[in-house]
Amino acid sequence: MSLLQLDQVRKNFGTVEALRGVTFAIDAGSVVGLVGDNGAGKSTLMKCITGIYRADGGTIEFNGAPIHEAEPGDIRKRGVEMIYQDLALAPQQDVASNIFLGREPTKGLFGAIDKAKVEAEAETMIRRLGARIPSVRYQVGQLSGGQQQSVAIARALTFEPKLVIMDEPTAALAVREVDHVLDLIRELKRQGIAVILISHRLTDVFAVSDRIVALRQGQVIADEITNETSMNAVVAHIVGAG
Ligand SMILES: Nc1ncnc2c1ncn2[C@@H]1O[C@H](COP(=O)(O)OP(=O)(O)OP(=O)(O)O)[C@@H](O)[C@H]1O
Ligand SMILES: [Mg+2]
Picture (spheres, rainbow, N blue to C red):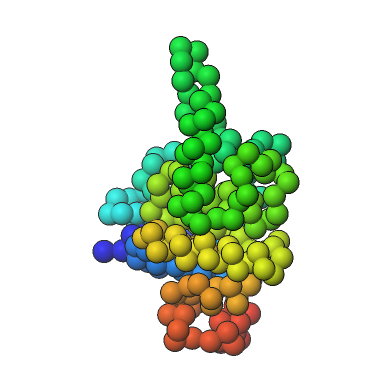
């Protein structure tokens, strides 16, 4: 049984058919690269999985249960986390606070935030991930793009996900930071967490994925094992030449 199974998922925005019957599956602990041109439907598809959008047709099963009519909070509880391109972090707050944003452990009668506990648990998360963050007391806004991406991933881990969806995590990063984020994706896989990596950077997709799913105009145009395809073949799928 697959961890995630999409069957004939459809989504329209008025007269725009953003998704026209998308079918594919993801196994537990596997990394799938989701590729496709601008407007192919990648983000829309992911928002249907996380419950931000309700699909207009088709079914989505996660861990054996249908989720296509579930609410985002319920889908998160079942183990689906999405890291958006803007990361949704609070730049003026420190790393520890960002990891627990709004869910900090409290103490005492008035529910004051237990800062020591927040920092200790944040440290644990960072260590579990092997992220290169000098201190959980650093302000997130002062960290590099790659370090901020690490904080977003550590935050996602606090929800104990079975699947993490990442939308363009390496797009804005310096070259040496890209490698670190790719290492973090490998670490998630090693911990048995499945990853959907949306990226226009095919070298990154080839470096970490087990499979590559290509979308074109709201349909799956190719679904291939990474080791059995090539950069040229995937580019041809994306632009519609193959
Ligand atoms: N909220 C919306 N309202 C109307 N149309 C939308 C909306 N969101 C997406 N679309 C349309 O649906 C189609 C798919 O868009 P989507 O954002 O899913 O593409 P994408 O593959 O994520 O592209 P990109 O690589 O540029 O992020 C496009 O034609 C887009 O214009
Ligand atoms: Mg998108």
